[in-house]
Image (cartoon, rainbow, N blue to C red; front, side, top):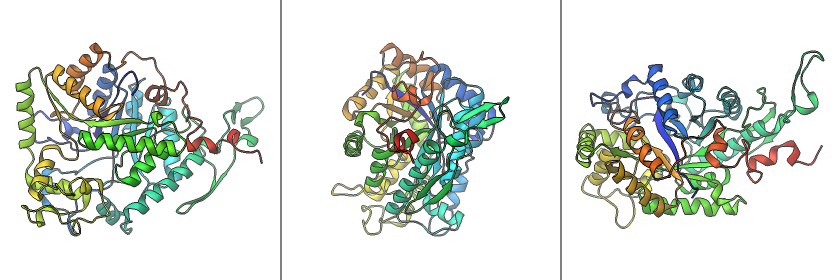
Length: 454
């Protein structure tokens, strides 16, 4: 673990959690001022980055959207974070900005161009969360494509990342952009080239028309905890988002780092961030009252719709007093959230719904006053070897309670560095002193200076 924790903040450009509470502001997700205020607050508090999850999915059961998902705002509706990020970049200078682009529906040249442009616009503060996409059954229907086998989706993702890396790292030399008006030379033709890629799922011959930004390649994040997801993270990711209870988190982190070493990477170079739900107030009694209010906003029907979004499975059609049947529970969507509820001590379907009602896909929250939740967080870090937290929104849909109460306590204990100079997200998050990929990262091999000259 590094000397200081890394702190990211989790959002999606849509309704969040306890939106039914009168003091929740996530219903303002299409109001730009909502996001501008949030970004400014995050930067002022000294957190490392603001992350937007994204997908094209929504709950689907059978061949229809459950009415309760629409009525109850369960993983529905949501906007497009990439349309918001440039505005946030304009009102911040240090805050990292990270978003998800799915490897199933966004083709590599599209991802490469968007991220390269955002790298410039943010002055090197952009990150890409590499996922195959949540809500796969709905997404496949929306795009009119077959639902792809889970493990094949990760093979596609690996091929996608390889091609994207070739475009970012291989098309332009560092000094390829000249901009010599007197000589009439904008770019040196000897230092700009087309790349070729012939992979199992993608083929390309062409050039990335966006010159390299401060980082060249965005900081690479990953958020899948299945075995193929952990393998993808070990090979490519520079930071990983993980959501589970402490024992499972410890095992996942150890496995990712073991796999990274097998790929020839420094296992400590991957920052593992656990999803952290901090229910914090001035007193423990107030925090527990907030917890009860949050839980009361979600019904078991809401929980079933959320579970269907992540897994494609309809728990409401199963026997509530028995565990899930492993055969019935076989799915190509969201395997992580199925496997966690199987095994010799498997909970009943009712208990799964009650868990989703309380915590959704996250682990148990930290509850109490600032000192209490930081004590709990320190114990979790020590038990898992994680490098920090991806903080979930509070009951207001913002991070105000965390920023006002928890961040000062973290500073007092020397657990975070908040007075850092302006730098790229890679430099800030990885403590490498360089804005570029590490030499042992697979993407570095696509640089011209890493290849034998033609």
